Image 1: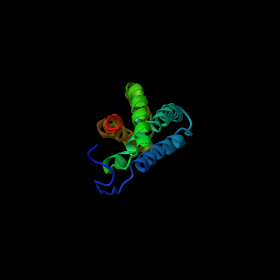
Image 2: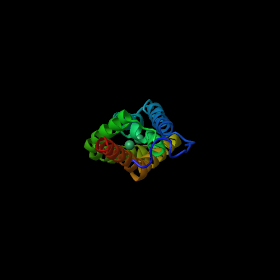
Image 3: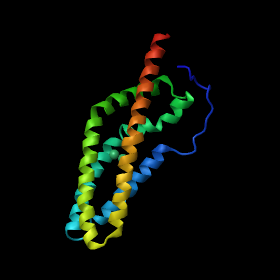
Image 4: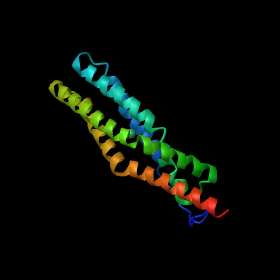
Length: 166
Ligand SMILES: [Fe+2]
Ligand SMILES: [Fe+2]
């Protein structure tokens, strides 16, 4: 690849992995707390929490590591082993991508019903948690999923190019 090791010297101020991990754990924490509220509100929050835990667990296996690699890829710091690992993660993500989008729709549906219940009770924590969740999904679909796919494609091209140039 043209951007070989050491050709580009950049520094990234923000770690995307930490940012995503933080958002995931904040959303899960708030939903956990809402799920302890008695009645339909707790029940609805519990359903949303269950769906989100399963979704986030899978995202953290593919999307998060691919996004975390972008700094190294841009700087040309990913070695061959790392490039192969990223390329494999990309194949795994290709298989689960449609499922992730379906899960987003399901999560948004569940969030909407929680919001309706919360509106009747005047619970502001539920409203702000759901606002954060909707924004999170929007940013994932607009930027983060495409970027993670791009990182995987770059890695897999780099693997093929390295093999060819041997
Ligand atoms: Fe997420
Ligand atoms: Fe997501």
